[in-house]
Image (tube, rainbow, N blue to C red; front, top):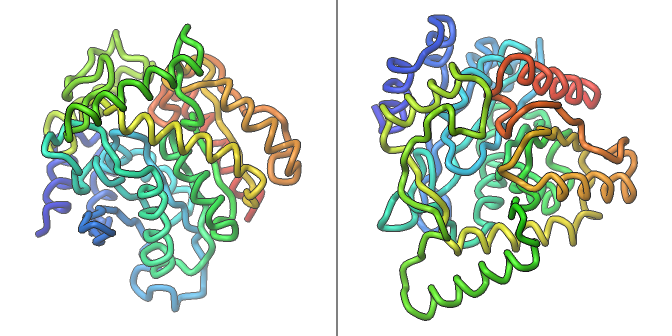
Length: 344
């Protein structure tokens, strides 16, 4: 039994919401691949039994594939309920843990620090996962369902590989950072100065201002979801599986995010994949204006890819749409499935 399998079993024994989901979760395949710089990327796969038995030689029924791209600090262990729901809708589901988080290899001696050498590394990992793992199990062109940082990774991947994805949904995508009342230009200067100081004084990446090692936040103080039950499952997951705990971000990580966001907008004309952007109206984690600008620009350049000039807004929802109260979460999932079926 490998480490990934042990951790997923630990998760289900402590956090399962229903026996049905628990039983389903144990049917998954949990494995890993070695990416560049000897980084191990863990992933999970849930294939319908008919295809799982005969692999892609079974043509009696084709199950479309969805690749789920999580956000920063997340592990696929957190996505049990969503994966179950997508599977029940008739999809084969594939999900990976990004480098530097989840069960995948951490990149610094302090395992709590959110860090990546280059944002492009996330994109390259996703590319390898789809080209060498997903296609192996499901020969159909997959859909992408991405959240937050995963949304930025997904967009950059679709810019690099314009014909790889059938259609994509990006939920609360990290297309810009929310700097609050500080102008974006000033916030970027602060990051630049702090990073330069860090590089001058130390070889070890520093936390950005206000960031620290992993510490759970009480439900009342959280700004991710209105669902107390789903939030508690999330907290318990990280409590009982300490290997997936991750603290705040380093200044270097923020700069890599800024670079990626600029590249997304500078190369937006290269997108050839139909994209639906789901926006949580009460999201304070990422920049909503950047999401609006993305939709308007993509619609102007490629109206067939993005028919509307605005995001699909889910009023009242916080950042984590797929972990929200049912009244918000159901809308996000319904919109996503409808978009995929529209591009079947």
